[in-house]
Length: 147
Length: 147
Image (cartoon, rainbow over all chains, first blue to last red; front, side):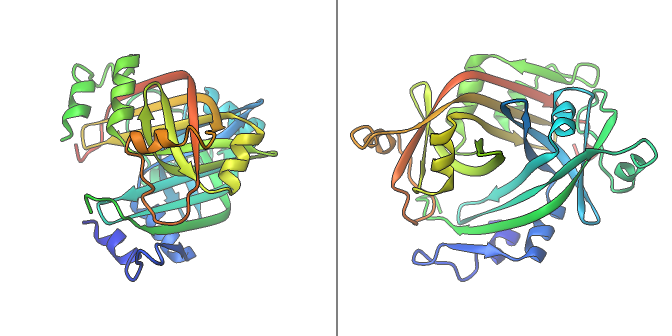
């Protein structure tokens, strides 16, 4: 049982199994997680990649190499970011729609300031910022038989 | 420590922290998880939603309502599906690129046959199938300080 999920699904029942979360709950979930996924366009294709991220004020930061992820967000900055979590009794998800951009070198130190480290020690030279335009979240009461 | 992750990151080190997974490992991870995310186009927008899913032979199945998710995959069937998992020492992710389509009524019973239940008891009348065209996976050795 995850205490944060338990709090967010409190009062939900089989008859009313879903709740929209307020902005404060969404941001608390964003601050308390570190692995999310970013979906973006790259030409005609949708791409979806896991990223470890950190919250810096009211934006999200993640590191990347000068590869396809970064090329994607520079060509079309409209991205969607997602986190979710679940246990036997409930689930939560937060969807962030926003604009991504590569931070200039003189701004990239912000990633260090918020403790954003690359999990994996490969070269990740660029910091990408997602500036949210819409943050929505939902909490779900689960009817799974292992609840 | 997650035994499946431990096995997949065995032999990875700080100097060689990432491994591409073979098809067999990817499908084993897909069969062993039940929460993933689907990214798709809806007009000019990218959408990203969490779904609970099940593996049916060599395709993925998830349930949805006649809402935006389903409209999206019917208008543009190119989708990307993702699962990931991590513990203190490693992480794994599987990315499935494929074609989505709504199952006809006479096929929708396949979802019951593989034990795909909606986690949340709202009306979810449609079953969507993702037929993979590309399945890739990676395992990561993590250098997180809490490892």
